[in-house]
Amino acid sequence: MKKKNLFIALFSTMALLSCKKDYSCTCTVKYVDSGSVYTEETNLTIEGANKTQAIAACNEATIKQVWGPNDSYEQTCKLKK
Image 1: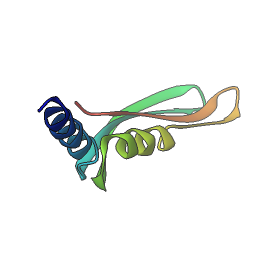
Image 2: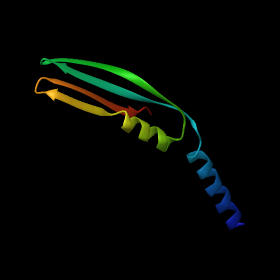
Image 3: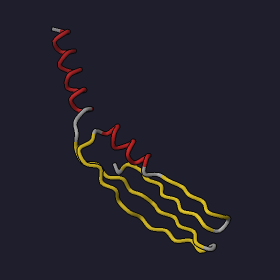
């Protein structure tokens, strides 16, 4: 009986972890142009992913570019809870 319960618990956990659904990330964009700072918040939708894939997609959407001391672009994304 213990093996059966353990199998059911393990199967249920795996089913929940591998469940694919839609996720979204909140991205904060910071753009510096000639010393002037502009910020905005955007959302990124990840469709048909499990949680691990969604976290990876948010991390991949995080970028930073610097063109000089007063010009840069930075986008930081985090998975919404």
